[in-house]
Image (cartoon, rainbow, N blue to C red):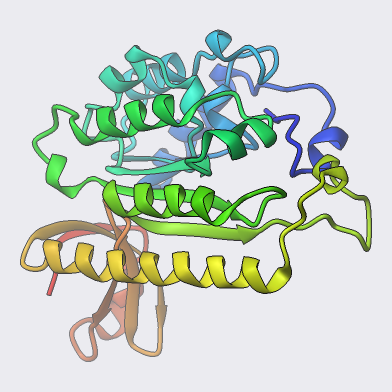
Length: 284
């Protein structure tokens, strides 16, 4: 699925929106699980728009129904959603993700909390609609609700973005405790195909973009440290993915990277025991 956004050029090159067949998705998950897979990540150009004929028709999205059927017709223990756009999240979506097989990490395609900037970007939602979705996520009826972690994609320095616009975004990211931020300074791509917003007046100087990017990066690091401190002493469900120099690396259900030094514990059996398996570990 693809947006027609004013900060992207490749959205014009993707062609019409396409949806992968539901049966194919479910069959692939079952095949992966059959051979030992423990977690799948649902991803796409705009995964939450699945089922819609195009990304302007957000009410056509059937993503919540896809999630429901994956839960009903597979037994894979961990289902992770890569990124979600708020306008496609209906009430049923929030009912479905109360299932604990849906990992408690939700990454929003935010871009900005300034309504002026969102309108200039040609986004299909307002800041109020975005905040409503975030607050609903925070209030899910799950017994692991305290583990919920939020991420966001953010663009800084979009044409005509004032410092006040930037502060709105900064303050909301701080208020709603986003820990994992993918921050991108706006680029007109002048060395290649330019994006539609490159024609806008009110270009932001690169030095200002860099300052705003750094400020958000620092906030992300601060929030990550706070979140790890909050989770200290809790037992987290960790899926180990790879090993390097005697240390195993994996991710908790709420997307905290865990490093486990095993040294002499497993010897030759380490790979067999830990790769693609998940364990409850106390986060210290």
